[in-house]
Image (cartoon, rainbow, N blue to C red; front, side, top):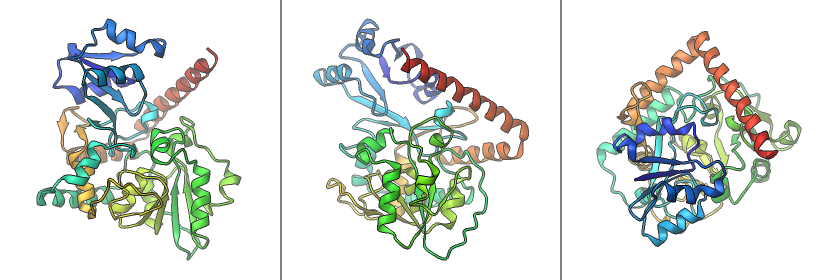
Length: 363
């Protein structure tokens, strides 16, 4: 039997296409009303030494993890992939790529992950490196990134200084906890300004924070003490096109900037740091190999994630996902009806999540 812990109810149907090889009767989601009852509920549902265990991200289930160690059960950590969807995960949007990691998870540098092992050990094939180069070209040409939420517009900056992009992050995200030791967006801005007195700093808040779904907001007046400009509802590609450098804690934006041959400075330890392609303030001694850009892309986007087609929900390669997301994005940008429909759904989703958070706080 396959036991899934930490998967929100809305993820249940969305995640099943990625596990289509499993008998649906063997998939058991553990979602007790009170989280402390998760282990007893799993035992009632048959959890034993022959089980396979999946946990969403870095959510903690100590009794399950202890049970797994005692019974030599491998725990698989599951998380969204790097080319995800048209829309935010926090708006309960279907993901079209995930990672399933048998050692750890890519955003936690305190332990090995399958991605780190791939990047450290795989002898990359010529065909994969050629694919990696073509994938990067396509992503840049079609202006695709993880969420593809905002339209790209040409940015005009009135400066001749070096332009530094500082991407905000969700401050209670596990990648910050494990990969940046709890650093805040304000601290990132302060460090960037300290290290770049003469740079023109553009701050871009994280989309999840901007729409009010997650934590990490900085008051505009405070942010502008360190940044020269704040950009919000505009596509990532628009900012990457005009920046010279990216300064980040652990954001995926750093990886996307590398694909565009931008200088990247890291203040945490993201998965793409430590391989000789970034300027890092921290060091991870396990990462001894020097990679070129196509090797990093091949390991991260081809070998590590699983993909399903946005149109058929069947397994596919990344090239199919990119092509179909590009089509979805084109329809979204060209159709008022589609935009209104999606924005209305997102509005309702955000309001519902807000009331649920209030309810949890008051109970």
